[in-house]
Each structure stands twice: as C-alpha cells, then as structure tokens.
Image 1 (spheres, rainbow, N blue to C red):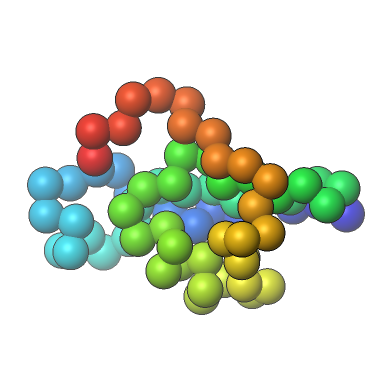
Image 2 (cartoon, rainbow, N blue to C red):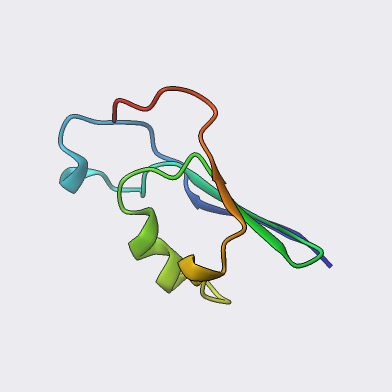
Amino acid sequence: MGFVKFLGTAGARFVVARQLRFSAGTWLALSGTQILLDPGPGTLLRCRKVRPPLEPLELSGIILSHKHLD
C-alpha cells in the first residue's frame, strides 16, 4: 500500500533557522517507488525523523515543480 507523508509545510523564509515548521517537502510512495516532491531546506534532516525513516539512497527520484530560490 502506498502513502503520502508531508515532511514540512512551511513556506520560504529569509532566516530558515528560525522557522517553527520544516520547509515544504512531500514523500510519495507507491508500489516500491519513492519520490520526494519539492524538498526544501532541512528535508534530509526530516527524512531521518519520520517513521518509517526515508533513506535518501532508496529514492526513485526527486521532482521540483517550480524554480526554487529558497
């Protein structure tokens, strides 16, 4: 069975370290395929804290839906 996990829901800020929420990033998993959608700063740190943990080397791909200047 697949799932969608929101790794962060905050928008871009000028001082990322002061954000209360992690910046945006979504983990999609279905039929053995794992994709990160729009990972922002701190997403790799967040990958280790979610359950089950997301192993970046097991990703099938990363999708950026728009130009990310943040």
